[in-house]
Length: 401
Ligand code: F3S
Image (cartoon, rainbow, N blue to C red; front, top):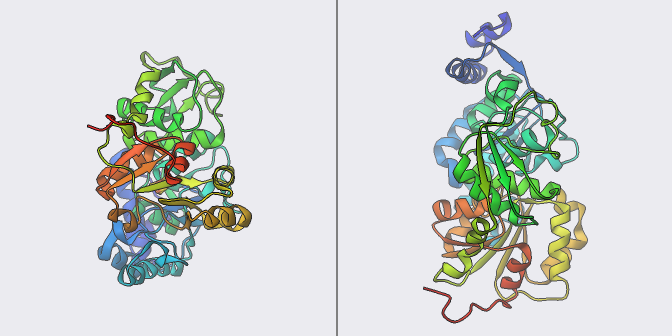
């Protein structure tokens, strides 16, 4: 891999140990994946923030790093709400460790807003064609597909290394040739709202890590695109997708319709919703906000809860900035007895681990909760989730088995 004189000096340790380690990680990845050089990035988004996922070894590694990041860098969700951490019964020991992790990132100059939807934040905008080093899989999918920026699915250490150097190795989804559709997906039914998460869950399992181009019978909204990409990145490892007539890059790419074709039909999506009927347990906890709720989603939750009282635990996850911008929605939601939680999520927080059955409206959470939280999971749309929390959904006799 070609390195400039300055990069060679960093690799030789002339700029200190932290930057030597960081560039070593980038060069190693570049060599493995055949990159010719390092390229500048506009921003980084760093996963590996929750103490639940990185533990003491991760905390130690981050704490040992010196230097400041060279480009704007932001964090993925942590293991708890950083302000109201006892709201979900997090232990003081966990809270102490989690705070130390965030402080260690802060020392490096990382923006300590912990969210998986940083592209919605003011001052952290992403534009078409920007090169990035982002690691949260749903955010990677969104910026690659919906915005047309360019990032690989970085690990936490490689995203942080890229932020410290201000560059990443030029391979994978930074190159045109790897963004070309490889499989065509024809969806034979109209879709709305949580259907997109179900579609992503089904499609990701079939497509795995290929680049799909979808042919849909309807035009999705931004939140539906977010849900589709998040689910595909979790049940498969899709990092970029295209939708004919919708996503920005499809008309600019020079490609032929892929030979590999799959068709997805309504009954395949219905099977995901059927999880509600197949489970033996009633959901004990209902969660909304994977990926973190947008302002439109928060508004919808508030409309569905206004003047009502929940009878089950209902947790709504969003970014702190979105929560700050819409205090009226927060007030309505919290008045119902539901909890609005920032900086974390139902998957990376240990709080979910004490529930044995969880209801979600997210294909990504549906994919991850059984393995990461050891709980049964059922799927429904946002309205079903709210109804369940209000105690209005009755499972019909004979449904469970
Ligand atoms: Fe975000 Fe957590 Fe889902 S990081 S995408 S809310 S699993």
